[in-house]
Length: 408
Ligand code: UTP
Image 1 (cartoon, rainbow, N blue to C red):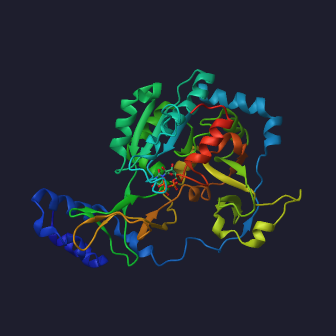
Image 2: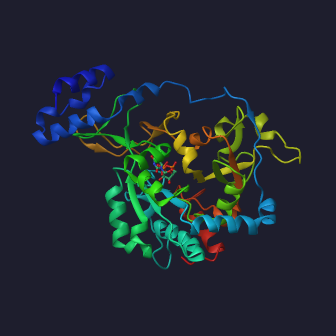
Image 3: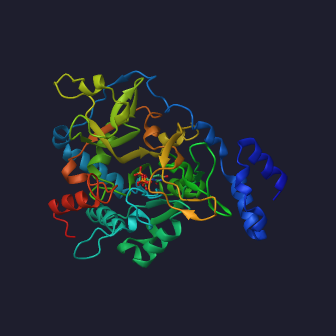
């Protein structure tokens, strides 16, 4: 490693403090620190003082969602179409499990969290059980791609192995790692998490396709003839994965992407809602939704921006590959970042102390032409676990699971 190059990069971005412990490190750790400095993309730091991406510049208009009534009318057709695609091996699933789950506050990957009461029920287990519903119905294995990050890859793969993949066919499970981005304090100085370790954080769920490609898995997707990928979050323990009806409807409507949506609980619910931005399907975040938009009604007298996304999308592989090179906006997010203090002691802050940098999957939607917002029943398909207690928590998810007859 050329120390001169490392120093030049640090000077360019004002990050010379990262070599603070260099003199006391053994050669191998010096080498590792220098590699991290050279490999990490420091240009993200320049986004700290920018305003939120794309705020308020576009023309927002409502998008039509396929409602529960409309779905019920065509249920049989959609089910057949979707099941046929699954049986033909044209559908795969992507589990986004690279996040840090800081709000839940467990040291393990979120999927290893046990939500059981009388027996162990791990989040990963719930997901595999949900996928099994369709596998059993269609008598076809579905390839499951699991995105992890540097922070949780080993723990995740080890856990699946230990649990024998919860009975799922090992040959249909593929792990891949997403990239990391540095994490910095409010002044844009990258934290050290160890004397030879930069603080870093997974770079958001927006880069899932690039990471699949970098892991060589897009080749497998092509080879296997997979045309649709159902991408979903780790934390919704009630969701239906590779849902044939959703798949059939998205194919039937000739869309590039389908998005499962639920009706908002109340007008101020903190959830991103589907809309059109400059005529493109898109998601408007709750904090971008003005009062005027919130109160706009459609021709039936119902709120026009009322369908919240639940991070369960069905992407047409060819369509999403065609926009892969387009860059996504970078979101600068306040976070609790473990760091070495002045005395070289590791601190785990209780409150946010800096920023991480992420691209988001919801920004991918806007790059595509045709999206189907597909309504699902909240009580039956939406039990996200973000927190330990309160809203979207282990407690609220348990209640919903029980209501759906799932024993815990
Ligand atoms: P969240 O937005 O809930 O983030 O992720 P998180 O990191 O899991 O949790 P907090 O905010 O720290 O509490 C939504 C989904 O996207 C995945 C998560 O694993 C979850 O399934 N995700 C998030 C990634 O795969 N990679 C990321 O970099 C971020």
